[in-house]
Image 1 (spheres, rainbow, N blue to C red):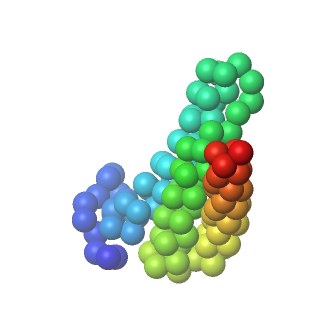
Image 2: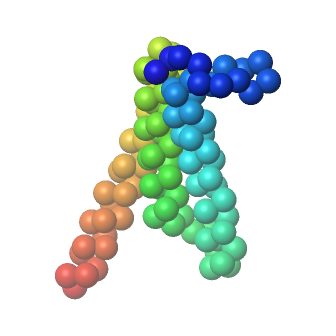
Length: 102
């Protein structure tokens, strides 16, 4: 997965870099989702999609930094947001389940 697929200017793009780029795109796009939801509701709101994008982006970046770069700093800096996103999704699912039962 470390073979260069193509070059953009002088940057060799490997499959792992594509995983990293997609992870960054997902992780960044969560803020646009949050901004849209806040604008639509007229108040600050963190939609569930924010947490899904955060988790997916973080896990893709952890994969990239683990297998593509072997960079422990990148792994640690992206592992914590994944745990926060998973925690918030679990809390949200429990809250939805308790309100559906009631």
